[in-house]
Image 1 (cartoon, rainbow, N blue to C red):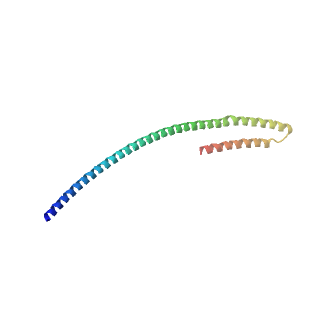
Image 2 (image 1 turned 120 degrees about the horizontal axis):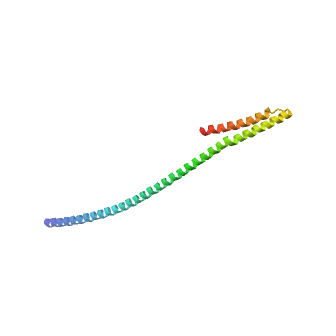
Image 3 (image 1 turned 120 degrees about the vertical axis):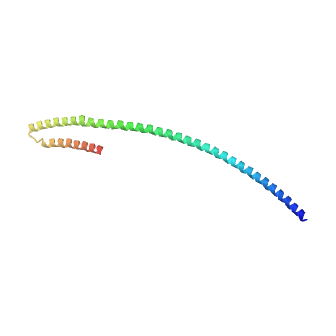
Amino acid sequence: MILEALKDLQGGMTELKQEMSTTKTELQKEIASTRTELQKEMSTTKTELQGEIAELKQEMSTTKTELQSEIGLLKDEMSDLKNEVTSVKVTLENVTNRHLKTIAEGHCDLSRKLDEAIKGNVDEEQLLVRVGLLEDDVRLLKEKVNTIA
């Protein structure tokens, strides 16, 4: 009876060992299968991410090139505008102001002759013309100083 019980117990232990071994093998297969699936998914995700990163790098490179081109164009336009402004200032200083001075001097001469003819006082008008010219010169000098500063 005890022997039978021991044999039954040994038989039960053998069955339990076989079941444990089978369960262990099944778990190992499932773990291996899950690991393989995860590795495939991670590999796919990695490949997708690498593709997206490469695409983003290409887009950034294109954007950078476009921006550099636009900046170059803007610099050229700014240079052209500066040259035009300088040309206008030079024309104003050398041509227009000189002509205005000539007209003012001619006007002063006419005014002086008229004053001599009618014995009037031309000093006030001459001073007004000179003050006007000096105000224009001061305004131009202020603009130059502001440009330099």
